[in-house]
Image (cartoon, rainbow, N blue to C red; front, side, top):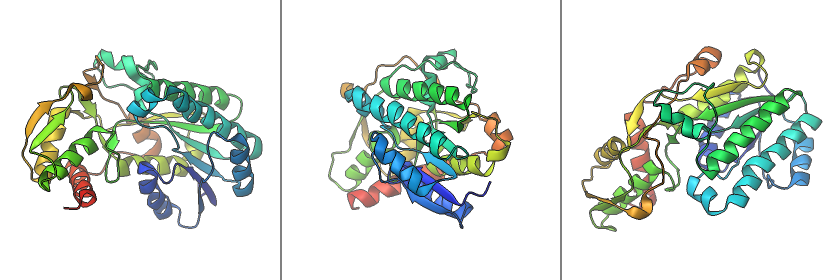
Amino acid sequence: MKPRRILVTGAAGFVGRHLMPAIAARFPDAVVTEAAFDITDRDAVAEAVRAGRPEACIHLAAIAAIPAARQDPGRAWAVNLHGTLSLAETLLAEVPDCLLVFASSADAYGASFRSGQKLTEDAPLAPVNVYGATKAATDLALGAMAATGLRVVRVRPFNHTGAGQSDDFVTAAFARQLALIATGKQPPVLHVGDLSPLRDFLDVRDVCAGYVACIGAAEALPQGAILNLASGIPRRIADVLEDLMQAAGVRAEIRADPARMRPTDIPIACGDAARARALLGWTPTIPWTDTVAAVARDWRDRIGA
């Protein structure tokens, strides 16, 4: 599929800033519109869709941080579920041939990770936090809409990081502290949460490549397709911290901070992306060392080292 018009919601966010150049590289002739509307404003959504008449839409706009969703559940549900449904309903009514690429989340699997196995897309959705619940509910709702004609791909990326990420997320939180320490703006003490869990990390640029590949492979994808984007490599959070310290060239005392502890009993969360490999030809290509170097460099630049 070579779309002439692509709509991107959330283009100004962390993932969006990496996605826009990826779209331009893959579809240089497409007119790409960055959605400027409030996703919770149904009239604004309808006006934008009618004006742009997209042939593909990558929907990133969301309350994406677990703490933010926990602090304001009403807003998280309004944006992540109801805003997405408003967009999907408008696309189906106004441009029914438009492909919607929905950025879901591996957080929707939640308690299913307690199996300790690498999860495929067939694993039950069993969220354990508000953010995961909003993504799971939206994922299921869009699946039901696919049965009535909505062209949609539900993409479930695992943890992804890179330059520009908020320090609401673990790798960026570590990198920010390391940059502060390196510049003498923080004592050489790193305040951390639980370092024992293992998580499946991706570079944000690999995730964006997956979203773009969904558009390219649109004609071959099953209606309502679900695709994991995962490395399949579980990394202990303690090892991620060590990798970042090496990239930043900083050593520090590591001190547990109760305020940073998240209530969870999921020791390992890892995914199986065999379906994305088969249907999209997608696989992560950016080495982990390049990813942590990019995160460390980004925070060093932000802090002003």
